[in-house]
Amino acid sequence: MSESPKKILIIEDEAPISNIIKFNLKKEGYEVDTAFDGGEGLKKALGGDVDLILLDIMLPVMDGFEVCKQVREKSNVPILMLTAKEEEVDKVLGLELGADDYITKPFGMRELIARIKANIRRVSGMAEECDENIMEFGSLRVDMNRFEITKNGEALDLTLREFELLKYLAERDGKVFSREQLLEEVWGYEYYGDIRTVDVTVRRLREKLEDDPGDPKYIVTKRGVGYYFNVG
Image (tube, rainbow, N blue to C red):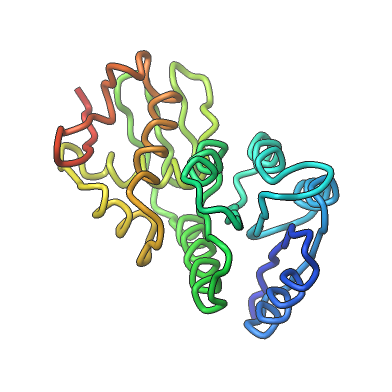
């Protein structure tokens, strides 16, 4: 029995761009739905079985940042943000709000498809893990199979990207990884962005995991090198 096609939601108000993306994704075998404003996009994102969202920033009704924020409150579906701006603040803000990736217009279709495949493959790979794998570090309990983490018995809301970075570091306790290494290993492909992506994700993780994010216990910075996980 063949696997059902993955479903991608395109939230983009410029019809020519939306249409050409839709055309190329359908050629790749994806099921594609579209929305042309943030309100409609949010409704479809939360109301359907979506495997990945392509989300423009500049949208009518509700901008992409707000859509991303509201989706993240209820879903861990991968979000790839589309932006026509080069400003670093836009990219960082998208990541801060829980986006998994971003790509700047104009972009090549091959690059976009590679990004989509990498993000979907990452999520599918995590879901296929079946061995019992629970790790405990002080007040933290990490269930690697269910992608769940609790602190003092209370569930923490991590995005899949945050969970994957935590998992990667925790399974290699004490080993220091540079930002470039983490981009390659955790993001899972030749990343076209910059190393600040790692810093943003680490900062978000610390805010959720640490009692004092300014003096982290678990995800520690090795000055001039990168990050490592410390069990204490």
